[in-house]
Length: 207
Length: 205
Image (cartoon, rainbow over all chains, first blue to last red; front, top):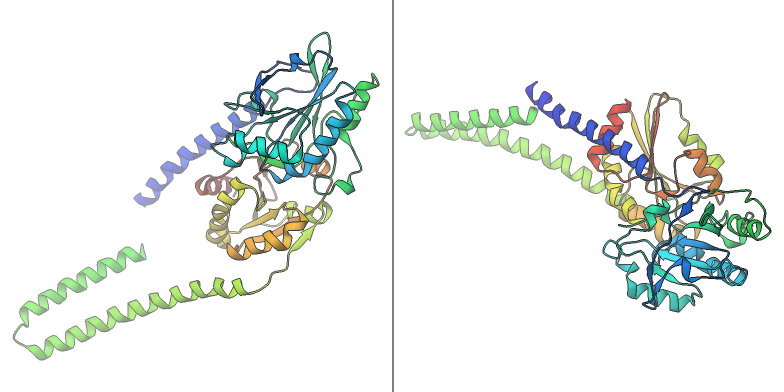
């Protein structure tokens, strides 16, 4: 009988701990929402130079993608991200890729590995390191890939779209909805983005 | 409790054996009979334990040699696993072989399934692996790790639709877990330890 009572004490403690923890989680996950103005950042590119959004004087906005070397979903989208940059950089919406993973937690996402991957794939856009994992929480990114479209306005850079590139990560040939392209096209046409948020499976950001 | 009792019994037996040894030191015949009885009971105990041990270690070995058939569903087909209305507690874990944190917590789900099966808890492991790795990675992973919980595969391109259908709060990262009974449902976009899992299951029951 006594043994049972003793067994219960850590369990009760755990209940309190877990409930406190889960509350914490829900409040911490919030980052930028559609309509929010984002802060500019200054992050190191794979060529060693620092990159900020304010460096792009002619940009009308950006396609910001949190991606990495190691996640199969991120890899599945690499070619589609390159295609997006080819299509939209000249129209004023260049791609900015940010690797949010801590290389200590995921060695395959080290600075050297990023350089190698970018060279292999021929990235035409900056591939930035989120050193200290400080920028991704501001965006509220939870996974790779996690994509944002922002538009330059008088207020600043405003979030116009958050989510997936399209509706078929597994199979590029089965894509029927090109959410991100539709969003940028709408912005270029001066229209409201119809689908502002979508969801897709991705790899948890490794910190 | 029964283990403790057995230890106590063995200690008493051992003590009485020493006493008998002391008193009957000069009577060799009696001593022989008593020691025979003592060793016979001890041996019987040992034999029983050994038999139990061999059964457990042989079964997964046999399983390892068999090929397995994957249960693959689109979301519509898979949905039934999320809406059972019986007396059981269902623990639905979304994972993939490439997902490090998922693979790390799988043993805890396996342990939960093994220890709470008799108490109406069923673990279902939902693989989100890409179709082209079913044969090369997923099947070998299931066999190598001797997964005993039910494994199903969810293959549905329209993630934006089914992620929201599973839970509005889910951003789409894995591991993710649903624990539900016919009365209550909880969704978690996070990793678990065994103790945390056990606690959540107990809270729902």
